[in-house]
Amino acid sequence: MGIRKKASKNDDSMSSIDQLDETFKSELQYFWRFTDENHLLLTGFVLLLCAMVIINTIFIVNHFTKPTQVSVQAASYSNHVINSGLTARTPAFNVSASQVYETTKTDMAFPIAGDQTMLIFTITITNNQQSAANFYPVNQLYIRDQEGSNYAPHASMYVTNPIAAQLVPPHKTITGQISFAIPNHLSRPLLYVDLGWGTQVPVVFDILH
Image (tube, rainbow, N blue to C red; front, side, top):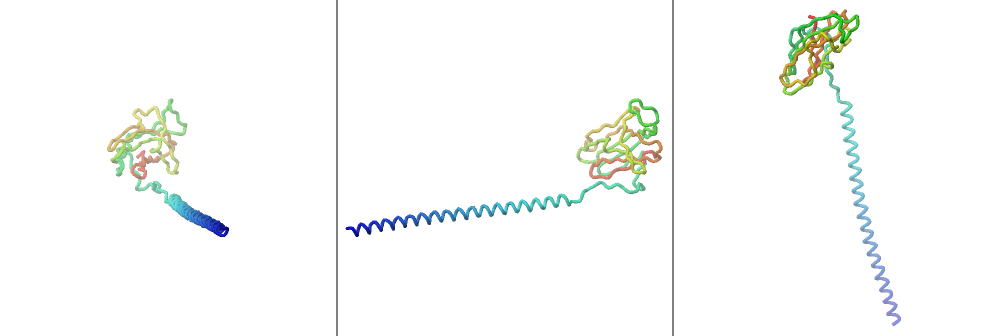
């Protein structure tokens, strides 16, 4: 009996060891499965991060190395200047300058310097595009002299029909007067009409001729 009891106890111990061994194997398999799954997740995250870095690098390189588009103006005025009274026609717009005159009369509302004269004329612009376009006289019209100095529009009390900033509808024509205070010694002031519509380069008028 003592031997049987001892054997039974040994069998129970072996059974417990086998159960522990199976539990350990199960836990070990779960551990390795968990490790493998997390390894795959970590690998996927690293690959995604690398792809994002590469895409951002390509975008930055393309953005900062892309050539800048600028409006090109003629280095010489010959064959590029239109006399006032004529109409310049482009795919984006037509523009003409007319009724040009100068005055040195005192302007009590908008005084100018003693060495300046007031240049006043009528400008007419037609939008040839299929979409509306913005017109800002103070930004898109300027006078340039032969030395390259620019003169922005200057208000005058002698302007009776001023042209206003506005949105020009397709195929709509606008007209009105605009004035500039320029040095009175300028013999050939050039009017630049730089609308920027349809990527057209500026139109240049020999405004006094």
